[in-house]
Amino acid sequence: MSSATSKKLRIHDNPTQTHLSNAQKQFNKLSQKVAAQKQLLSAWQDTIPRYNQLLSSKYRPLLDSYNKQRSELVYLLDNAYHDKHFKKADKSKIQSIIIDLSLDLIAGHGKDELKELYNRHSDSDFDADNQAQEAEVLQAMKAALKKMYGVEISDDDDVSSQEKMQAVLEEKLKEQQFKKENRSAETKAKAQTPEEQEIEARLQTEQENLKKSIQTVFRQLVAVLHPDREPDENERERKTALMQQVNVAYGKKDLLRLLELQLEVEQIDQDHLDNIAEQRLHYFNKILQEQASELQAEIAEITQGFTQQRNTKSSPEKVLEGLNMEIRNMQHNVSRLKTEIRALQSPAALKNWLKTYR
Image (cartoon, rainbow, N blue to C red; front, top):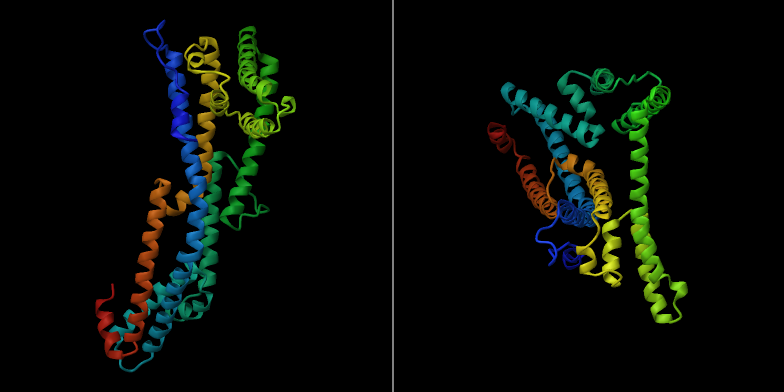
């Protein structure tokens, strides 16, 4: 959506009204908010595929190369551990580095071939230790889920990964909510007072009026844009394209876009916007508020794993800048480590390196 189009959809002061009413001010504020959220959502939808492509084509190959070099360093250190040129203090430090590096490469990057070295130098068993740790974590997570959500995770539930655990939790929460709603509905039906019945009736009426408000705009557009009613072929093509936009907007309950289309086809003008009845504005504002909340939730959903992974809530532009910086840093690390490994073939150089290693 262009900024020019967004600016048009704004209520202005008019000669018969010195100041905008609260409903008019809210309409302007919500229209601006929805337009900004739509623009941000579009930016993320464009950025995330570009980010993922850059991640897979450049960063991950560099990371693989870096981890390959680190594995070579582990093997080099293992050979040095058995070399008579190195004293007990040197060997103790070599062993400590082997354990730290191999643990990170196995646990974080799937380098299972290093398990034998890790087990030998740590005098333990990686798989046994990992199983015991996973069992402890699983029990802690079960206890936390029961405390936070009242959800019982049984031994029959497959929670062998974080994704499966999340799926089990969501399913149990749905069941919990379903039972709660059923109990609530039964309780409400049995114990609803006349006042409560009146409130519920008003809420239902409000929902019907909201639905009719957006239907009215949709029907007005259909009345002037339906291509079957247009004899001119070129005009029919134009109206067909516009009707597709109308149908998409109506399907999404995108009131903002429907009103913009009304302006675009000159079905309404600025004077019409400036003089929308307060009651109609009330329903428009409710719809726009719902749309703003839905857009915010959609943005949070498509960026959730992405922002958690990178520990950021930055803008799409800064996210791409950050990844490019990471790629440059990784290129430097790969080049540096290759040079170091070539130099460390010499026992004397390796001894000096051990003194500086932290």
